[in-house]
Length: 381
View 1 (cartoon, rainbow, N blue to C red):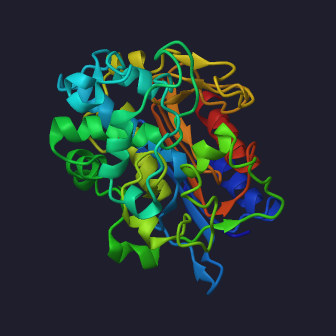
View 2: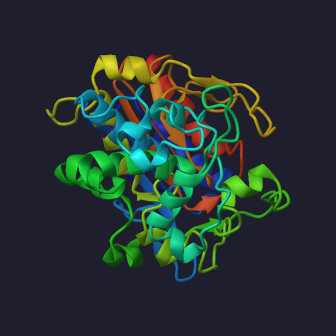
């Protein structure tokens, strides 16, 4: 397929793999962006943003990126920690007093960021409209008991991650995480990246489609189902459902662990500025901050028995995980999302990378892996 955009000399393999995704893997619409040492060296896009009317994917098209959002929230938390406004290893109750009850008194933000807090799902079940309002989820987390002694086990905090970290951000800054992200980072950089997209942007977004053959979810009593769907209140993937991931209600609310919307260029620039700085701007996260963030905190079999796919987490980020998310090396930090999106940075190799598609495939999706392998070949030789 003929794509749009450009790749600098030496980065042609990334463009080749991007085209192959359309020719061999049924890509609908997508974009890939790469920064090296603060300069954009790849900016490619192509295909269809909305299959209902054939609207083309454009250079700045944004799409839902699911759990790739966790990297955005993590960057915000680490930035606050670096400024001395947040202590990752202090009890969260120091910032959020109502949280410090029913066995949660010692939970730290690092435990949450490493999926070790014991709060992977809610026991109370706010309805969809309540979830969209923020506070009902916060109140439910305040009165919940952990499922295990915090810090002693792990389970993916699929959605709760966002409200836990996000409420800590709100208590410190007075802003919800999406608003803080725009004010502290995104607006100055002009990023087309949001947690809670403005209503006027909704018609321009790429629309998700579901690939054929995606595996279904387990039964509603399973921990995996409860994690993915907020106890059934979110329809996953819910392409056409009012409670699904194309829903304007979902897109414009702040669902901070899974509800980000971004262009590939926005995410790549975010990771580039975190790791190296961009266009002469200083780096957002220091060498020391990233060193702390990429130390392994969590790996192996989980509390709920979700199969171990080989993922490794540092503080908030997925770190180099050869079996499931092979990045560039020991200083790589990022996150992927359901449907195929991936974004990561690396300050050793000076990289900020992102891939954003709208055709949802499944776990082990080869599209991003091929692009990332091409990036690795280009920057590591």
